Picture 1 (cartoon, one colour):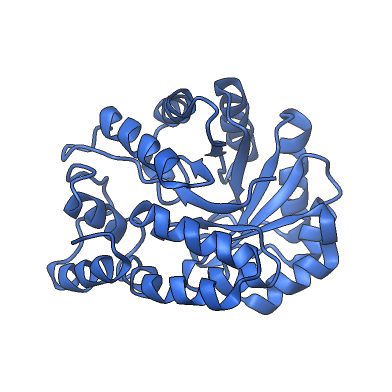
Picture 2 (cartoon, helix red, strand yellow):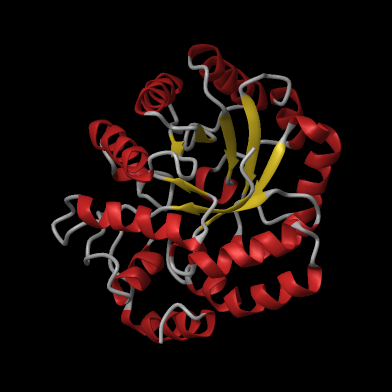
Length: 292
């Protein structure tokens, strides 16, 4: 299974909201060159909630074709309708994605049994590795460790992105599931400690801005080199916080624009980063070595 720094990739856009395909290609290439372990297109950071299904499928295909097997592609294919999640997951498999990241259904608040049946149905419909994604702060839906344990018995369910930032919860999942479930952090601020406690990587927002720095930190943490990992992570702490001063991906898209990596484009209802946050994010980028 994939280990290390996995980038939750932004979707570059022009100011009118149309997708900037050339910048998408360039970002994918940059991550391959920077030591990023895998790319997740069209997740939360990729503005999946405002990307139409045909665009979604085209973005996944574009990234797969650009990467050309040099690193894995984990396509974001979650949805709050099981049928749509199956459609997106099937399209990602057809596009050549290596795995899929499936956020818990948002807004409709399924029960734990509903969550189990949702993922069970996707696994039955599409034979591709599934990475579960639990982020209750976004979805109003919390997948409990006991449900993760049930799902770990399904062959296609191989990992979970746990974004609660709760170290004790992640340790419990590790204890319940053992080798049946790989755990990735979904919270950059706690990712280092999570990896030192057995997680195999992080699906990261910070990696968009500082990919080589995140890759080095993750490698050290996974290797159990606590002092080295914490030292590297200390330089990234400002970014971990600064990229959430407003709703993700508002700050990270501004940061990449500041670096000259993407154009000024984001889709409503998201807006441009408020001016009072420009300097804090800029300082965090400099501390991390992402901006001179």
